[in-house]
Image 1 (cartoon, helix red, strand yellow):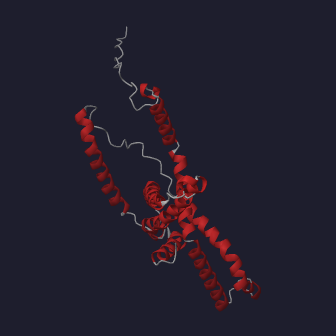
Image 2: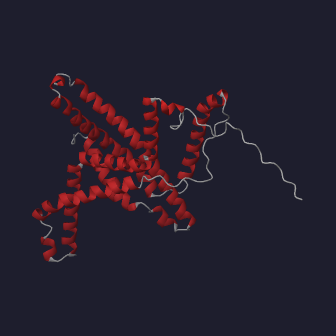
Length: 293
């Protein structure tokens, strides 16, 4: 006969619903239950809506500086035209297609393609990489009052240690992509916030247009629009920057593990410097100089 040990008894309270669970007793309260269900649904949809928010943020930023992007596109075409003429790289027929009239037709189209490429590069590059299965994150030290109180400070200490560790590993495999992203994304936010504020302002002005009683109460619109634009910029901008740096770091680790040549690893992101950072910096400097908005 084999000795069979009795199964270990599990606490009857284990897995009991908490008051924040949308299926618990709190969900039966009309307003609170709707709030819990709505926030849980939005939380589950975060991975779908955040990239759309990144695209919208990038689109609003480029919308503000699109005229300068057209100027930059025109300068690039002029440079290519003159270079081709000097080197006789192109035939006479090809050179004739890049005259002034042709450039005026091509510039808006090419600038639009450039804007779409920048938006897709930054927004799709901000998808959060798969989380390490071995990383369990911060563990709350106990379920009692003392443990949960200490967790308020312990979580911040843990996040600080994680940030220092990430920074040390981030600079280990530096490349052009890791260098230009921390510059390009803050400059993008510099353009996105005033453009978002303008969008909110136009939206809020629809209220007095449809409700005549509010026609004399429009002083709140300008300040409220800027506050909402800043909040929107922070909510979307911080994950945009963090996820972009994290993904760039993961790609640099993969290249090192594949034993890619050092020069090739260093030059990773060269096209981003030319086609992403340069136009964003051009638009941002124009905004700082007062030539936009």
